[in-house]
Amino acid sequence: MRLALAFLILTGLTPLSANSEVLVVVNQNSSVESLTKSEVVDIFMGRFSTFPNGEKVKVFDLAPKSKLKSEFYAKLVNRTEAQIDAYWARLLFSGRSSPPEKTNSSAQLINELLSTSHGIGYISSQDLTDRLKVVYRFEAF
Image (tube, rainbow, N blue to C red; front, side, top):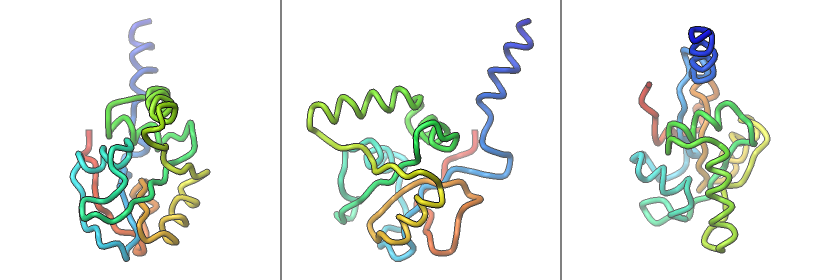
Protein backbone atom coordinates (compact mmCIF):
# COMPACT_ATOMS: atom_id res chain seq x y z
CA MET A 1 0.00 0.00 0.00
CA ARG A 2 2.78 2.45 0.91
CA LEU A 3 4.63 1.61 -2.29
CA ALA A 4 1.53 2.35 -4.36
CA LEU A 5 1.03 5.66 -2.55
CA ALA A 6 4.67 6.60 -3.06
CA PHE A 7 4.35 5.80 -6.77
CA LEU A 8 1.27 8.02 -7.12
CA ILE A 9 2.97 10.88 -5.33
CA LEU A 10 6.12 10.62 -7.41
CA THR A 11 4.30 10.40 -10.73
CA GLY A 12 2.40 13.56 -9.84
CA LEU A 13 5.66 15.39 -9.24
CA THR A 14 7.51 14.41 -12.38
CA PRO A 15 8.60 17.12 -14.81
CA LEU A 16 6.71 17.80 -18.03
CA SER A 17 8.95 15.43 -19.94
CA ALA A 18 12.49 14.20 -19.77
CA ASN A 19 13.56 16.50 -22.60
CA SER A 20 11.84 19.76 -21.68
CA GLU A 21 12.78 22.46 -19.25
CA VAL A 22 10.95 25.57 -18.15
CA LEU A 23 12.31 28.74 -19.71
CA VAL A 24 11.60 32.37 -18.92
CA VAL A 25 11.48 34.25 -22.22
CA VAL A 26 11.07 37.70 -23.74
CA ASN A 27 10.70 39.04 -27.27
CA GLN A 28 13.97 38.75 -29.20
CA ASN A 29 13.97 42.55 -29.63
CA SER A 30 13.96 43.16 -25.87
CA SER A 31 17.05 44.86 -24.48
CA VAL A 32 16.97 42.43 -21.53
CA GLU A 33 19.63 39.76 -22.00
CA SER A 34 19.36 37.75 -18.79
CA LEU A 35 17.76 37.77 -15.35
CA THR A 36 18.65 36.22 -12.03
CA LYS A 37 16.19 33.96 -10.27
CA SER A 38 15.62 36.71 -7.70
CA GLU A 39 14.70 39.17 -10.47
CA VAL A 40 12.33 36.62 -12.05
CA VAL A 41 10.66 36.08 -8.67
CA ASP A 42 10.27 39.84 -8.13
CA ILE A 43 8.74 40.32 -11.59
CA PHE A 44 6.34 37.36 -11.53
CA MET A 45 5.27 37.98 -7.93
CA GLY A 46 4.41 41.62 -8.64
CA ARG A 47 7.15 43.21 -6.58
CA PHE A 48 8.62 45.02 -9.61
CA SER A 49 6.77 46.50 -12.57
CA THR A 50 9.98 47.09 -14.52
CA PHE A 51 12.93 45.08 -15.72
CA PRO A 52 16.21 45.69 -13.85
CA ASN A 53 17.20 48.16 -16.61
CA GLY A 54 14.14 50.31 -15.79
CA GLU A 55 12.01 49.32 -18.80
CA LYS A 56 8.35 48.63 -18.10
CA VAL A 57 7.41 44.93 -17.98
CA LYS A 58 4.18 43.17 -18.88
CA VAL A 59 3.92 39.70 -17.32
CA PHE A 60 2.05 36.88 -19.05
CA ASP A 61 0.87 33.75 -17.24
CA LEU A 62 -0.71 30.50 -18.38
CA ALA A 63 -4.30 29.55 -17.68
CA PRO A 64 -5.22 27.92 -14.36
CA LYS A 65 -4.64 24.18 -13.97
CA SER A 66 -1.89 24.12 -16.61
CA LYS A 67 0.80 21.52 -15.90
CA LEU A 68 3.49 23.96 -17.01
CA LYS A 69 2.10 26.70 -14.74
CA SER A 70 2.20 24.37 -11.74
CA GLU A 71 5.77 23.35 -12.52
CA PHE A 72 6.83 26.97 -13.09
CA TYR A 73 5.58 28.23 -9.72
CA ALA A 74 6.89 25.16 -7.90
CA LYS A 75 10.35 25.86 -9.29
CA LEU A 76 10.09 29.62 -8.91
CA VAL A 77 8.82 29.99 -5.34
CA ASN A 78 8.07 26.42 -4.19
CA ARG A 79 4.32 27.16 -4.03
CA THR A 80 1.23 25.44 -5.42
CA GLU A 81 -1.14 27.13 -7.80
CA ALA A 82 -3.70 27.52 -4.98
CA GLN A 83 -1.08 29.30 -2.86
CA ILE A 84 -0.20 31.59 -5.76
CA ASP A 85 -3.91 32.40 -6.30
CA ALA A 86 -4.29 33.25 -2.59
CA TYR A 87 -1.18 35.46 -2.75
CA TRP A 88 -2.59 37.41 -5.71
CA ALA A 89 -6.01 37.70 -4.08
CA ARG A 90 -4.40 39.40 -1.07
CA LEU A 91 -2.36 41.78 -3.24
CA LEU A 92 -5.33 42.60 -5.46
CA PHE A 93 -7.60 43.23 -2.46
CA SER A 94 -5.03 45.54 -0.90
CA GLY A 95 -4.57 47.39 -4.19
CA ARG A 96 -0.81 46.86 -4.14
CA SER A 97 -0.46 44.99 -7.41
CA SER A 98 -2.30 43.20 -10.20
CA PRO A 99 -1.68 39.60 -11.24
CA PRO A 100 -0.03 38.70 -14.55
CA GLU A 101 -2.21 38.70 -17.66
CA LYS A 102 -3.67 35.23 -18.24
CA THR A 103 -3.31 33.43 -21.56
CA ASN A 104 -5.23 30.31 -22.58
CA SER A 105 -2.29 28.36 -23.97
CA SER A 106 1.44 28.40 -24.59
CA ALA A 107 0.72 29.37 -28.20
CA GLN A 108 -1.27 32.42 -27.07
CA LEU A 109 1.43 33.36 -24.55
CA ILE A 110 4.06 33.19 -27.29
CA ASN A 111 1.90 35.32 -29.62
CA GLU A 112 1.51 37.92 -26.86
CA LEU A 113 5.28 38.00 -26.33
CA LEU A 114 5.92 38.35 -30.06
CA SER A 115 3.63 41.38 -30.22
CA THR A 116 4.88 42.97 -26.97
CA SER A 117 8.46 44.17 -26.83
CA HIS A 118 8.34 44.55 -23.04
CA GLY A 119 6.57 41.26 -22.21
CA ILE A 120 7.85 38.30 -20.23
CA GLY A 121 6.50 34.79 -19.83
CA TYR A 122 7.48 31.16 -19.42
CA ILE A 123 7.34 28.26 -21.84
CA SER A 124 8.54 24.72 -22.23
CA SER A 125 11.86 24.43 -24.06
CA GLN A 126 9.99 22.44 -26.71
CA ASP A 127 8.04 25.62 -27.64
CA LEU A 128 11.11 27.88 -28.01
CA THR A 129 11.41 29.74 -31.30
CA ASP A 130 14.17 31.96 -32.66
CA ARG A 131 11.84 34.96 -32.19
CA LEU A 132 12.09 34.60 -28.40
CA LYS A 133 15.07 35.18 -26.12
CA VAL A 134 15.72 33.01 -23.07
CA VAL A 135 16.50 35.21 -20.06
CA TYR A 136 16.39 32.53 -17.37
CA ARG A 137 16.60 28.70 -17.28
CA PHE A 138 15.59 26.69 -14.26
CA GLU A 139 18.14 24.23 -13.02
CA ALA A 140 17.06 20.60 -13.34
CA PHE A 141 15.78 18.95 -10.15
